[in-house]
Image 1 (cartoon, rainbow, N blue to C red):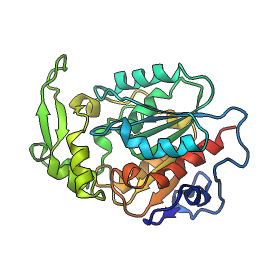
Image 2 (cartoon, rainbow, N blue to C red; image 1 turned 90 degrees about the vertical axis):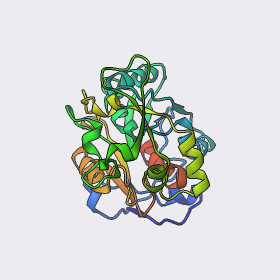
Image 3 (spheres, one colour; image 1 turned 60 degrees about the vertical axis):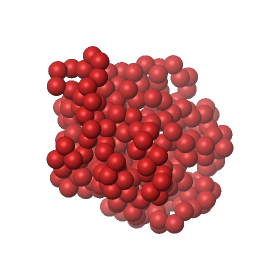
Image 4 (tube, helix red, strand yellow; image 1 turned 135 degrees about the horizontal axis):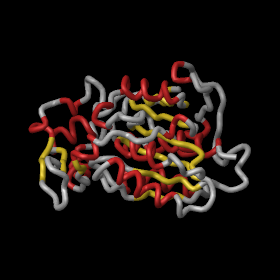
Length: 280
């Protein structure tokens, strides 16, 4: 389905939710699934959110606040942003401490992390990709941005590269420069907000983007995909291809940016709500 760019209230966002069939990446939506869920699970799932590169746990604040108001336990956890294998292991270890079902949500590179972390964790009942990568086994996150991604520009114009202790040979911490951060990463945010987020960004190691995925949890776990048509980091075309092969239930947001989770948290929360309501 397509969500208009104008801001909706939390309740209206959930009223607009749909539960399309697996092939709905090309279909209009037909059925609503508001929170509270029409058929709530016996045990409410915990929602665990994993941020991506150049972001942090606070990028989920809007979604986390709304879901908590709806009565759910929400955890936005730190992503080390070092290496896909070790990052996923860190998240998987955290998931194993949670009792009951889990809805696991990932943004951007965080999508690669949840794809690996959920493998072998039976408590994870749903995956939600938010403008994210969803690699298959052997693929790297860097391969999935899309041919028209802003990340294909000269690295010298995109990043400030900084050495870090214990880095693998040839690896650096990458910080997005201010101009591409505002122009391509958070292009629909007010200038002052983009400046604040740029100044507070978490650096990501080059290793994080170059590590091949060891698992593809979307092959066995139901998934939802939120795609912003204004995303210039992981292009909508690339996301649609990943969503199609994962047989995800897709929501297309008209406009936005790679940080729609910050600019329009109500729309993203609605998709998370659909995944929450799927848990029985």
